[in-house]
Image (cartoon, rainbow, N blue to C red; front, side):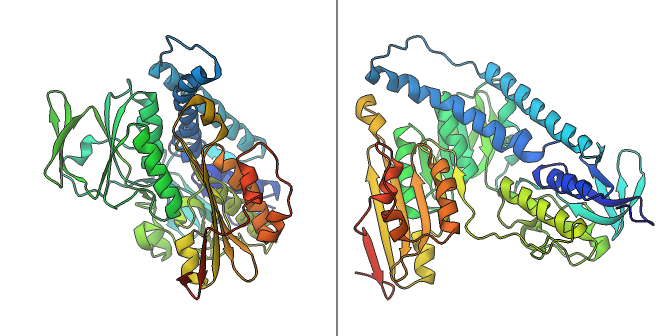
Length: 463
């Protein structure tokens, strides 16, 4: 479907998960498509996010496995960890995946431009590489998000971010992590197991603001048991080079020295300098691009998907948004993305899996609730001797018995959340869970054997 009067039908800025999916689907509908990427094909998830993080999480969990093996009769002696080998293996894998992304774009007939691109107007972009100007019927901004350096701390430039930590030349013996969100706790968990002495500082009174409180408490206990030092309600006021590393002065008057400082206080949309103002697009909170249900901005020819819109910042969401947008623009589809009941995971150890409303959020919307909680020692820990706890939680509407939320802390929690999300999407009730036969022995069987509510709310009051 070549549209006359334009160089291309669809110009995509950013070759991450959302941009590449949109480009490929648009091309499959017959559109002529160009993608511009200024860094590496694959975007945050493949290059410096989900994929390398999960590989490092796998590496870190061997530390617990080696310890636990003794309780099962194994003798594991002399195990050691080689940080440079992990870094090299990670680089090999993400390069392989980046190559697959590139190959799939080319196979679909998409032209790849390895350059920064900026918007000159509703139908025109410019390439930084050679200054070339390209006209397009539709423009998609899929530039994602980047670490936010908005910390009021003198010397914050001494800190690294999640972009750099994967490629450090050596494992830091003493690591300060600033932040209490999912990126901060994930790196605290994995780096502690790889051998760093980790100190985690954050402004709030507990980690993972916005997650269900039972999971926050359970994870805090697990992090302390792993030897992670947690300092709530405080942040560094200054960082400075010292003879032995980086000195940090904290808001409570204390001082400590570290080998590396990781700034993990959040991410913000990468919209600066893109030229969106040339199309009359006003940015929203945190620099995000406001869009409608189909990814359209206030300028009819300019669209945005993924983290740059700052809605639900997850890779599968960006992929779905890119796919739906391309179908809408070039395949005459009117389907919009459903952002309801999106499962998510936090890859700490133990990990978190969740979908739907937490208890506090549900209470704000529903006066009558039944809360089911099962907390127990997992079977593996009975022989390993490890002090750990699995938590499974269901949030249920009292009258209809509709399941509003699932929250899991424990091994394979993300896998559970993905599967239960299907049932919740089909509006499963607690009675449906109860009618399902348990699979024994598993942790997940608790989801279908919890009979009595742990807590009841009636007219918003605990009874």
